[in-house]
Image (cartoon, rainbow, N blue to C red; front, side):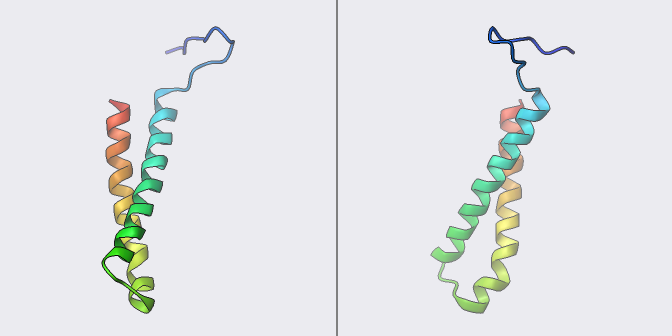
Amino acid sequence: MPVAMSPYGKSQPSCFSCTKMDFVMGCTMGMVAGTFSCLRIGMHGQELMDSIRKIMMRSGSTFGTFMAIKMGA
């Protein structure tokens, strides 16, 4: 389906581009929230380094998925 042109001559982003951008933005926000939650519950040192990667990926992917679904709908 062709994308409509704006009055300024540039085309609008496609639905997939908007959904992809929203997923990445949600992933970033979720990763930051996961980091703060690790620090808030009191993780330090080796415990923090062992679990922060898993928590960041889990919270980032969850929040990114829900944000992409919300913005894509």
